[in-house]
Image (cartoon, rainbow, N blue to C red):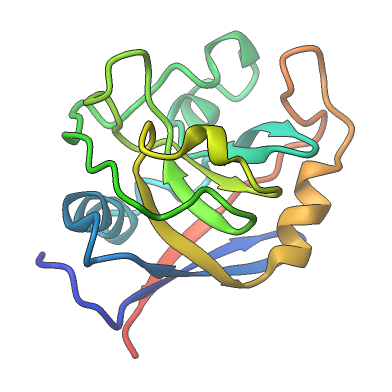
Length: 166
């Protein structure tokens, strides 16, 4: 599916909804990838598996639904493909949605993170592809949950992602 400027994503959690607007102008391949995964229900029942107060929340790993009880694998999964980096001039400020990746700049797949604070050291190193326009209060609740030594919330925070057309 080709990206459309008016599409938004709604991430539903037990704490409420997070609405994201996409940056189709600077990250069209990442937006298309996210939309396609969401439409194929890839993200449904995955969790926010990494929460770091003062920094970000991360989710979108299929291992969090396939291996619910084995947290050692959380953060290591993906969709079986990667998207070439689209580093851009969007600053990693509070509310920015960006793709997680390994050391390889072109390794982003399905995992994404939402900045809870300005994190400008990430600029032009990670692909910013959206911005939270509603629901930062939900993000703030998630980032402040009690967590284990691997920054995995003690309680599961599952998501369901839907794409809305304006």
